Length: 301
Image 1 (spheres, rainbow, N blue to C red):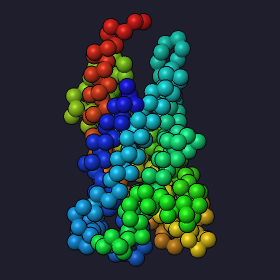
Image 2: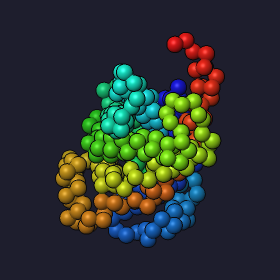
Image 3: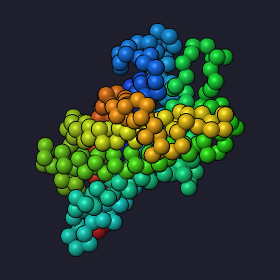
């Protein structure tokens, strides 16, 4: 049920916040200073490519979020059950952190199953589509998600779909450990809501807790997100790439562009992720609450 609630929340989040993700990606890939900020980037994209360009990559992004949140919420629920004290049934803060980290790592590394291949494929394809600048379809290298995936495999090999795996693992693991722990803490602190107590938050309460819980991750994981985007966006057509891996990319970006370059796109991430978490948790808490009210009271012990 928690997996399903996350899936529905992911669909809603993708539709609402895709333009912010497009702007974030463009800013992270901007090495020449073409964009002077968030507003200028958005207006430039609209003027040169049309308003619909702000929703470029929506199909892979929506599918990605649906699968990601389903896996995240379901895995976290399973791991939390495993880490609960067998005598008291209570979950410690350490257990909550480990559950979130494990869910984040699994979310990022879903490659040994068909779902994992698709997650990384969609993330790479989404970024390649978003970085293209042009109005005329015949001028675009990638004509769409399927064409983009085929071209990546043909030019860069199947390993091209694994680009950015290491920083994605570090980013997602750290991010989910912080997010699940913070969400529970804010629920308790603000609304006296304890997990499993039968109380269902109002949507606006879930949105506030989710928004606050979504602010810490982007600050902590900024460098991993920038490196992930650079690794996924770089092409290997000539047989060699600028960045050889996560550590090399961090060192190169720091040496060439300075320390703050590792947090490029932070403001758009803060504009997208906390509102996204607010939307996702507003939907997820209601779905879970509806299920608990209807079925758990009569469930056999």
